[in-house]
Image 1 (cartoon, one colour):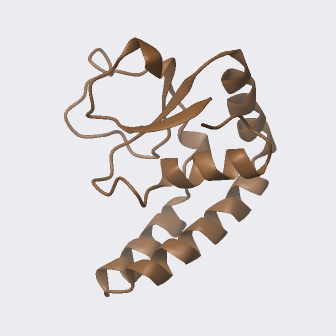
Image 2 (tube, rainbow, N blue to C red):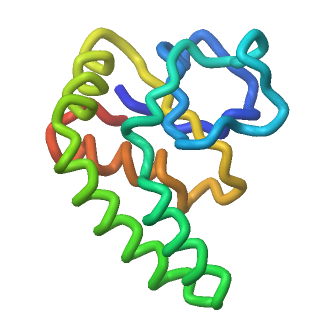
Length: 125
């Protein structure tokens, strides 16, 4: 099962394997204080995609930005079969919580990644 949670939310045993899926290290954490076991920055959206979507969103086109982000990020993930398979393998072993730092709980890369994994046959719940 794959869950999604903000990195700043309290860790609980039900989270299972906690995996940071942001490209950038979140503010306020040192490596010693990081509340996750693994950082899979290779599966995060590219910097180019992040910047493009941020610019659209800042211009007031949030719905368009989200739709474009999901489509483009899915294409990026299609080009990362090893990372996707690694996440699928981890999820097959038990619960996984994808961690993100964004403030928007409904529109972020972890939500898009979890949906992608569900569409592609990865465990999601």
